[in-house]
Image 1 (tube, rainbow, N blue to C red):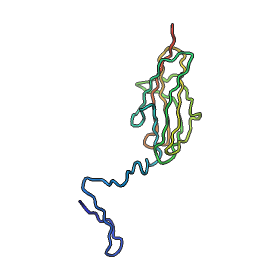
Image 2 (image 1 turned 90 degrees about the vertical axis):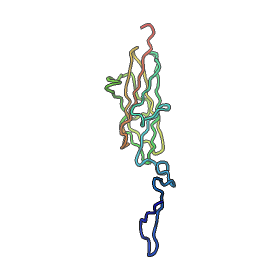
Image 3 (image 1 turned 60 degrees about the vertical axis):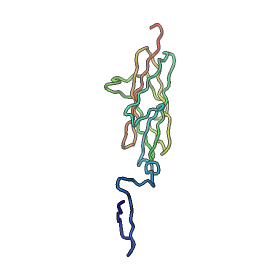
Image 4 (image 1 turned 90 degrees about the horizontal axis):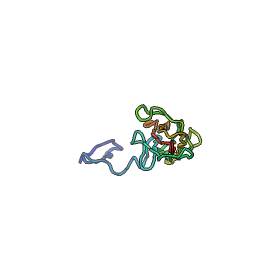
Length: 165
């Protein structure tokens, strides 16, 4: 065990901290006690989440042309400051989805700009309304003030079910 003398508090008194080499202080679980410094965005679908995944992948069952299928996400703020979403948009991925389909639309939240309080979450819902039997894709992008992960992304794929075509 090593003893580290940090400071002299008064004549003949000193503050000492003792620790064993290779050990850590176990009196504070700083991540859970203090939380992430600043906002921390997490996009969740089922049991998958980003981060740590760089891109969530969600495949929809074939959807009849006369119906709409919804994809539900949860946008969580695990940080200790408000998460400010500056934009929710649909984009592309050069390898997985080079051209975004217009068959996808944002249902919730009602605005593309929203604030998620620390320790809270908000639903994000995307609707898929196919107009043909073709394969469709889009990349949902959520832009925020999270310094570590300013853009969260989810690849959404679907196919219209057009019997007889």
